[in-house]
Length: 124
Image (tube, rainbow, N blue to C red; front, side, top):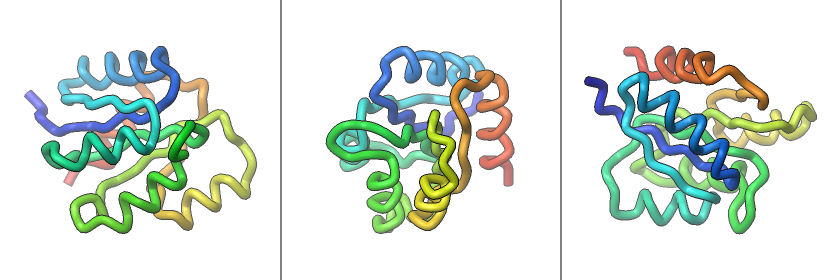
């Protein structure tokens, strides 16, 4: 059983559910937050995470702001962060990359392709 914890941050409950189901079936433990601020609150007193899947556009604290905060923290500085977004503009992708995002997954996606990306990033 894989006990690595994956943080899913998206303001869409159905998107969180799709990702959580796919990752749970692959043996990962998932945590869910509806925006970047809630994600930071979850991480304050929780166990470390192995990876985060983060939506770009969310209320309170958006995905790119969350990536910046994760990179600024000693606990999460090297945690891989995959942006999950409908956003296709090159400028937004570049902004995420410069903030420290590891990669980009375009919605809609096949859940098994997300699981495959997660496995690749967590190998080694």
